[in-house]
Each structure stands twice: as structure tokens, then as C-alpha cells.
Length: 141
Image (cartoon, rainbow, N blue to C red; front, side, top):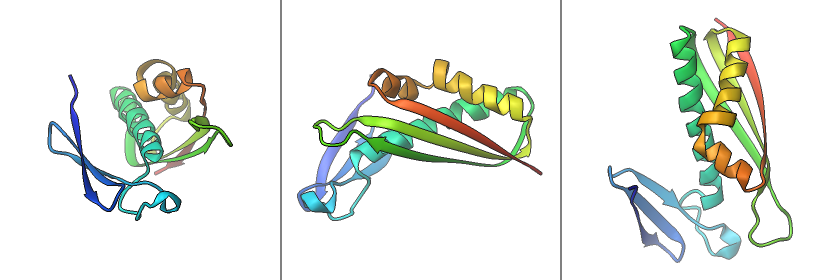
């Protein structure tokens, strides 16, 4: 069972969350609600989690296929529902940029497998109604 403890540490909405391994994530609300830019917004952390979850899958799959990754970046952008509460993620795009000796077809397939089979975060967001789009860019090195 996973466990996270949240403590208020700065102003009204500046929080530290600590997991059982001692890893800290700083959270805050937006300034319009009284946040102080202490940490990430909770909904932004979902995008962070999506990028991390997908990346673990993609890199693992490509390593098993003996693809040589020198640099790896994922940029995630998202748009939330407008004018409703709660405002869920509606459209999310992940752009995977991989530098190395990597076959583009294998990279595309690794991303597809992650999004549709392995990445629990992606599947959770999809079930909540988000449309997730991906793009893979390969830079040969």
C-alpha cells in the first residue's frame, strides 16, 4: 500500500508531500487563490506523473530492443475543461524527443504500447475523459 503524508509548510496553500521513501514534492495553489509559487499545482503534477510513467515504459521497451538512447526529453502540454468544477484534463499532448541510434518505428510502437497498455497514469486520465495525443521526434546521433 502506498502512503503519502502532506504537511502545510508555507502560507495557506504551500504543502510538502512525503512518500514512504522520504521523497518530497512541493505543492501550492495558484496566486489568484492565495498561493505563493512555492510548488507545483496538483493538476500539473498529474502531467509530471504522465511524463514519468510513459518514459519509464518507453525507455524500458527501447532498451530491451537494444536501441541506443543518448538524450531523451518529453514535453507535455494540456488543456483543462473550461468553466466547470472540477476542471478535468480534456486534451493532453506528449512530444517525445529521442536522440541516439533509435529506430523511429520502434520508438512509435513503444509510445503506443505505453499509452494503451502499461502506463497507469495515461489509462487513468483516459478513463477520466482526457484525449491523449503523442508525437515522436527522433534525432540520429
